[in-house]
Length: 300
Length: 229
Ligand SMILES: Nc1ncnc2c1ncn2[C@@H]1O[C@H](COP(=O)(O)OP(=O)(O)OP(=O)(O)O)[C@@H](O)[C@H]1O
Ligand SMILES: [Mg+2]
Image: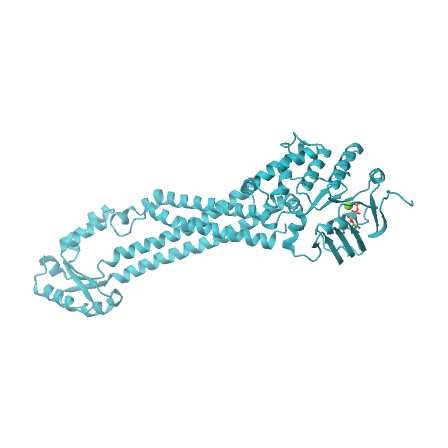
């Protein structure tokens, strides 16, 4: 089969019903943009897990008395607590953080919110014992054991908060994937329809080709390639859309938490990393759609 | 080369058979006219040979193809060994004269250099040299039919089927087309032509098979159009 034949047929086909082609490409682009968004959230969750996995998992806040007077955990209550914690089975490290250090950390976390910083005095923050666990999932045992001990104000399992936070991210990701799926269904129907229209407008020509002895494969390949080309263009547009969205919208919206290190930064490299997946998915889906449509609905 | 054995064709939408128990044989290199009034089944006959239709009963052979029984995926092979020409030319409107002719070679996978050599030769044979780059719409009816004949003949088919090839042409142009078909026939190609044209049939004096209501009512080795009427 001559490549030039297929090529010219594909160009003619895409041009002939240009509005349909555009609709097909745009739907594919949106669908793949959404899929890409979902994938980016997955990457973000991965990065966050990396960030948080070597951070403190349980935090023991000390009473105001200790917070105000003990700068280095030298009082007997604090020292006892620290020793006791270090002796516990599930504990990896324990670090003391006095009130000034807590305030510094607070300033760092909320540097994007000067209003909050202005209103917060160091006195309102407690000194803490920051604990890293060997098995974060068994944090509750430690929380129960130390809650209410002398010198202890509160014991917080940050894993619970993180889990809730990851849970929210997970549901956002699922929602995005569901919308992507619905959009993909629309794209598939559009691709199928475009091929049918394309085949219908060229039925006389294809009929002549068949009469001269062209195989089904020969006459149908251009339609298939048309679908795949449109699918690939769509996915590329989707990727560009994602990159633009990330650069000019997401980065600005999340600048605060990113600067304070609460949220990891998504790089353009992350978008680049998922783009082969998007292009591949698009090409494969449009090829399958095209093939099935030609087999089932196009009698040429 | 062509053999029909007790072929009956009843279209789904009609009760009367378009072909009714037809048995004919046409040998290699023959030139045969298929005549008969409108609706007598001529086009149906030719469509069966191309496997555009399958017979309701009976068997159809073209060369060594069992046309009615063969698998669908082998149909392209059959059609590649039959050249066909129609009243309405059936050229690809978006392709030039040369591309139209080349197409018949492309579908059988002939290499580019062969195509570039053979196409101009055939165009010259049908008297279209110099018009290779025209579009079909830029040609007269007679010229378009020459392109169709060039396309039908370019890969030297065993059989050339023509369904009223002169139906849309004036008598002089028709005469030219007939001369072309005769030349092709002289190369050993079996030519089977359905026609209404008395003068052509009468002047050529070739084998005539006459159909009426789907039945063969006459088969003369050197016939004329209107015998016995
Ligand atoms: N696709 C079809 N569906 C149903 N009936 C058909 C079909 N094609 C042809 N017929 C019928 O079959 C009969 C034979 O038609 P056919 O086209 O073979 O005649 P013909 O001899 O070629 O006529 P003409 O000289 O007018 O071309 C006619 O009665 C016609 O109505
Ligand atoms: Mg007819």
